[in-house]
Length: 239
Image 1 (tube, rainbow, N blue to C red):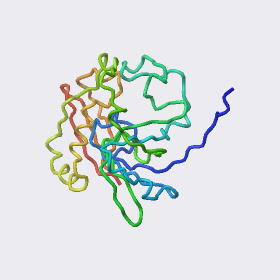
Image 2 (spheres, one colour):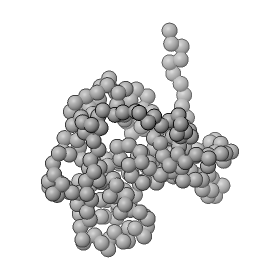
Image 3 (cartoon, helix red, strand yellow):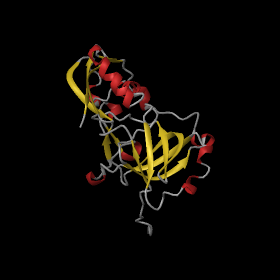
Image 4 (cartoon, rainbow, N blue to C red):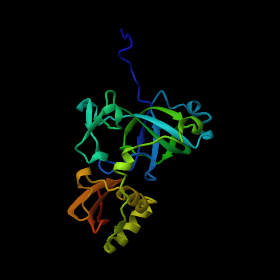
């Protein structure tokens, strides 16, 4: 009989990211150079907990899929990389709908910052929605965590798209203004949209008249698919 059926897990930090919604978040970490700021909760905001973290170029963030917890989970999930309708076992996937709602991402360690007595950790390559709860942080150790002969057969079936991303000429001024506030914004948009964040069943369409929208930081980004390329057609400052 299993006598360890329940555990208590504490949120030790939250991470601020450019991604205000799940739509268009990169499918995996490090597919876009999106920065995250990890802010520690009371009781965990002690810099000695991070002593020696500068020795590691990359870190594992263990987090909670907090936006999905209330929706529960099933034994099988739809697999976007199989076209969006075929299913796989939940434990054979990286679905956000999991028995315990725990996720893990490897990110680049960009160092610590100290503001008003608080210590924050800067990371890059995040694939997490803004405000995601962090439950643990561990060093990424290349000799143990990287397996040279590992394979992913799904990548042979449906690799992650890599479309050209173009900005409409009328957005030049708006883009300069946004870049002054959010350095690297155009590169972030390019890396996010190149992966074609549309639903999997639409990714075969090289012309799609629908305008899709994604919020990055405080900017509403509108885009369409035209002649196999992603065209950014709108950049709107929110709030």
